[in-house]
Amino acid sequence: MATTNAQLAYMSLAEVAKRIATRELSPREVTLATIDRITAIEPKLHSYYTILAADALVAAEEAEKQIQKGNYKGPLHGIPLAVKDIYESGPTTGGSKLRKDYVARQDCTSVQKLKQAGGIILGKLATYEFAFGVPTMASYFQPARNPWNLDIDPGGSSSGSGAAVAAGLAYGAMGSDTGGSIRWPAFCCGIVGMKATYGRVSRAGVFPLSWNLDHTGPMTRTVEDCALMLQGCAGYDPLDPASANEPVPDFSAKLGRDIKGLRIGIPRRLFMSNCDKEILASVETAIAQMTTLGAVVTDVDSITFEEMFALIWPIIAADAAAYHLEDMKTRPGDYNPDLRMMLAIGTLVSGTGYLQAQRARDQIRRDMLRQLETVDLFLMPTTGFLPGRVRSEPPASSFLTADGFSIYTPLMNLTGFPTLALPCGFSASGLPIGFELAGKPFDEATVFQVGHAYEQSTSWHQRHPAL
Image (cartoon, rainbow, N blue to C red; front, side, top):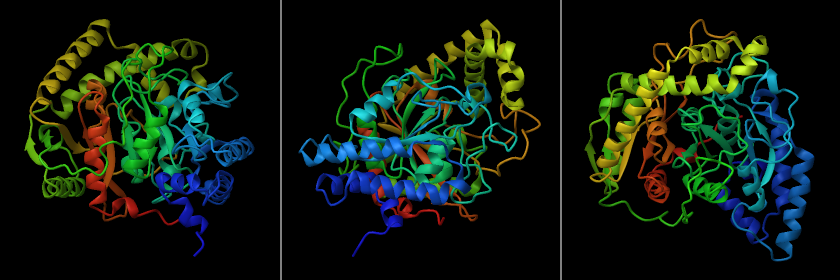
């Protein structure tokens, strides 16, 4: 029975890779089908800023020739991928009027690595402005839409990455994560996202938000796909001062192993006071499933949400303000008003306050490293609220001070621990719900192992939006 384009679109990256390797599918065939799907769906989703169809087809034809000659590079060879539009590669806007005409002179390190692994870059994906603004119809670029409900925000700042992958418009995408910008859209769009250990994936050539907290990494529809994509982009890069000179292991090595005896800590103090009941119920069910799979689950102490929030935002805001200071002086009107206000807040962070936040951050990391001597991973909700509607205008107040912005992802930006977001249910309104798993530094393989064991014992990853 022939495979339809819709079936092909939602096939896992791993499965498509196997069929390309055996020549059951060709890179050109897969790329053409994906471009056709983008043509049909993208006008209502707005997940892409730039579609590089001609370049992608040239790359697909080259991949096909290489594979026919027996030069198969691995699971990413001939696979259509896309990258957030803060990754320098061709037109790179950052979602801002300030960079609307900017064209990168060369590909950033992550894109180079993906191409070297045989990946086909389909285009550049939507982002909140400079990975820090909010999505509104008043922004210079159209905001991306959530494929589960086109009126709803797909999360951010890697909004296009989340939407495109969930909608079958790419088999994987690169996002960035400073306070949760890979994991929050993964939650909102019902997909998988990996914020690997700080320094694991190069940030060279990626527009910065916070030099201290920025992470780059993959977003896919399954845990296995995420491990395969991380394999293609991880590694030491001397062009990134924060890059870790650590060996790159086989991130898929533990997939399929059981998790009996693995110890999972639940930092309930972080989320119990401000988590939506529907989300909490889904996460508690996921925790129970972990015990059914043989994991040993215990509660662990943690900082509160308020303490985490008080530490993360002065660091992000001050770092962002430093990067944008010159443009803020000379072109303030070219920023979305909400982003301009948040950058202005960053200029008000005192040196003393900034250093105190960094000192407290270091203490939290050391405390959690000690906890990782008694547990193997942490598990918590990704966020405590469901995404709202895409706004017509910027909000009246910044989300820095907004009630209800209960997102728990920043804790693992403060620590730098590898953290995987994956789906665990749906709300009564039909929106995805998810949780995150965090592990020991540079032990992404164990995080993938546990995430994969959970995923394969449930059916959430098999559900896709009806578009």
